[in-house]
Image (cartoon, rainbow, N blue to C red; front, side):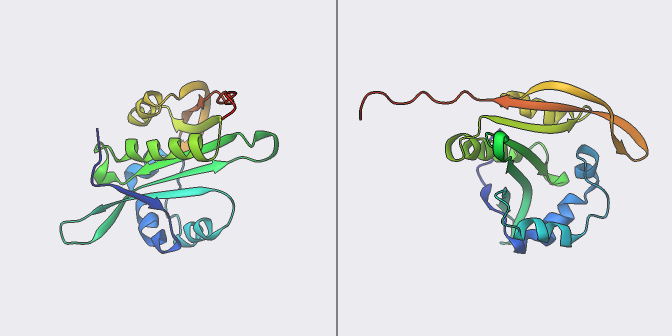
Length: 178
């Protein structure tokens, strides 16, 4: 599914209020490791930090002429001997699930990881009952590498989570002399 009206850009500190609202939505909380009542100050700190992490937002034009953030994603490269690895995070606003925004955002992250940062391994955690997210990740080359039993406490119940990874071989050097 395409998302032609989605504009993807780097997240900015001014996006913190909208991202806080999205992070605290029931569907986002249910499908991720987010806690309820996540404060805006935490998101502001994350966006203001020069950590080498890459945070994106997906924005759509609204009928009233405004703009709305409908998806948020991050790519957090590791360091040292794991400098070839990046951790992925992706959330979609509850009102915009199933419209192709998550797919578009994941493609943008994969392009960044593969073609700009040279990452060879991407990894993420996903709740085992988040079937739509698992299908999305599998369509883009991620595989379930393991399952952590009783890993996540959600609304008083321990649930399992999958560890998913995507490997990309390093490109062969150009030996043509050009």
